[in-house]
Every structure is written in C-alpha cells, then in structure tokens.
Image 1 (cartoon, chains in turn green, purple):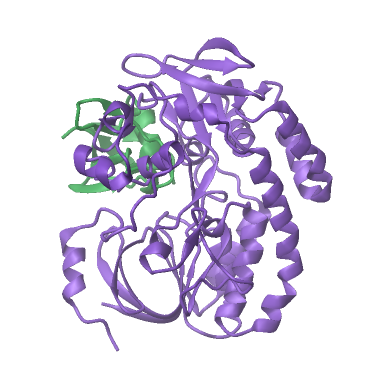
Image 2 (spheres, rainbow over the protein chains, first blue to last red):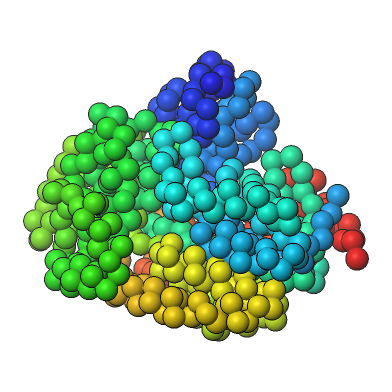
Length: 78
Length: 418
C-alpha cells in the first residue's frame, strides 16, 4: 500500500495503482493545466497523448505509465 | 553504459512477446523495450484492476524464464543515434542500444477525433478508459457513455461494468447492417463468436455517434445522434474512440516504407529496410491473434529460421481475413468529419481550435501558422485527426520522438560501443 502525496495531500493506494488512477482516487482526476488555462485529465491512457503529464519528484512523467511508489510527490499544478 | 544486442524488439505487447519467444531458441541475445511498466501491451495491460488471460500470463512467464531475453520496461525510444543504434530513456537514465536486427512491434493507438467538449475532464478514449480502469481508476457507481467505433467499445464497457459502472449507452457509429453483416461472419473464427456473445450489451446502439460532450468544468452529459434523433444523457464519463491506427513513427523515422498509414511488410514480416522487421498492429490493425502470429513469424525470420516462419503463414492468413472483415464493417461515416466547431480545440497540446486550421492547404502550412502539432504529443493525436478530417499527411517524425531529459539527449554525443 504505497503512501504518496498528491499536490501536497497524503494519499494511500493499492499496490500497482497508476498515478493516473491516483489522481481520481485522491482528487478530481485532473493532471495539468493547458496553455490556455483549462484543466485537463488523462485521455488516451496509453502513453500517447501526453495529457496526463504531471511532475513527480521534480520530473515530468506520464501519470498513465507510472506506478505509485511510497513517498512520491505528485504535482498537477505548476 | 551502452548496450549491444543481436535482436532488438520495440514493444512488449502480443507481437513483441511472440517475436522474442520465437527468436529465443536461436540462443541470440534479445532485448525487448516497452514504455509501459509491465509487458503485455494494451490488450494485456496489467494492474490492480486487471485480470489477465492465461495466454498472457504464460507468455510473460516464458519471457522472464529465457536467459537470453532482457526486458527493459518503462523505456522509450528517443532518437536514432547512429546506424542500427537507438537512443532510449527510462525513468532514471538515457543510453544507446546497438542492434544487428530490429523488430518493430509498436502497436496501435486510438483514433481520437475532435468534437465540442472533448477536452473536458471526464472524456477519455474508449480503450483509454479501459486502460485507466485496469490501472486502478475507480468507476463504481459512475454513469458512463461509451462511443465511437469497433469491438473495443464492447470490451471497454465490459471492463467498466465489471468494476461497478453503470453503462448507459454504447454508441457505435457503424450502421446496423454493417455490424450484423460482420457478426454473421464470426462463425469463421469460432473463438471470436464466443467472445462477442460474452461481451454483448443491451445498451448497444448502432448508427449512433457523439455530437457533443456537455459540461463546464468537467463532463456533465453527452449529446448523441441516434438514428437521426438527438439524444441527451447525463453522465460522469464519456469514453470515445474511433478505432485504432498503427503507431508508425519509429518505423518511418528508420526509413521503412509506409502505405495506407501502416508499415509495409513482406511475407517474412520484413520492412523495406534490410534487417528491420515489423509485426502486429503497426502493420495494420488486426487484433491480438494476428499480432501473435505475425510476431512469431518476424521472430523466426529475424534469426534465420525460415522454415518455422513459413509454417505459420496459413494461421496468419486466417486472422488476416478476420482483420479485413473487421476493418470493412467499422469504416467511419463521413459525418464524423463535421463534428468540430470553429472553437473546438483540435491540438490539445497547443490549444489550437478548428477555426484556425480549416482553410490551410496542408499540415506544414497549418503548423507554421498555428503551432498545431508542436506540443508534447508531437502531433500523435491532432496529426492523426487532421489526416482523417482533411487528408493531410503528417510529416516524418523528427527526434526527440518523445519528450526527453537534456541529459539523455547529451548521450547522442557519445560514441556507441563497437
């Protein structure tokens, strides 16, 4: 049961949960803010569309292809 | 820390797994790359809410049991570094892999077409929703509409229902006559007949397509055109995908010849470039059974076992027949090209609306004027959409093929091992 932080708030998820799923488990499911200010959420679910990109421990990662790990810091807002 | 291998396989879905296992008997060194955390591709994506079929488990175990197969998960191809050398990156590092022969098993992605409201949170691809659920996305008690085209709609609906969602409607754009005609051919592939019965859903409607996703901050409902009548449904999620299109970017960048948006291969699954093979959905959509047999043919052929490859030709022909029937039945209705309004975003990375694109003569002109396709996905979504809407051919991909770290790109300066 990894414990991570989503925009600073603690969240505990089942083993193997993707960060994309964690966004919906711990908040409103959104991953980023678009260049014109719209909130966006994962779209393709398979690493193509880049809508689910988030900052994880300071690196830009695709939430749909990243598995939650203990202590991860996930940021959806710049 | 660069790497050298005899056979490099890009993609660990059904085609890539079958290719690696077919080639493994030769004793050659094999490296398999995949950008997902676990092998299996999209159809056998594992996760806390996934239930893998026995075939997938068995192949995965065999793959890990082979001492001469090395799998790199969570790894992407960033660039072609030199002749038969690719620059790749995982979460920690970037490095180069040199190979003697390559098999492209890069799969397919969903065709996502723009319609008003499609950028709202709550709207996903059809296969996209299934993938997200397998990864642990909670849908229990949610109201879902699934729309678009192809058998993936039923598969996605089945996964969602299994996890407690209420599927209000499955909107298939193809006409009833086409879908019934396709279903009538299924006895030719008995396994598929059984599968289609298990997936059938009373909320399935043919001749129905999405007009608009409704909502302000997130999805609140969907407007559909169902047999010429407008229907509105309040819902929490819309999963919409218009079939699958081959992932050909890397093959194109390597100089492999394309035709009808797919990589061209011969009877040995060899592309136009010597020592470069391709198998599975990147050579045309046909399902996992076809991908498995094509992958095995490519694997055998790549290590010089022509006899074993040739023995699989009849099985491939059988599944190619299924692929043809499928692609004919679910061909897209021309009305789907008219869903976007002037203010509907087409490029979701650079937020470029339809109105700024219509009127341009080609992709390059539109891109220079609007930044369409210049964002993080590098036109994988909008390029495919505009190819469908306007017939614009997207340009040959240029490196980096995916967003990469500067440290990785600096690796291009290093000389690979000889």
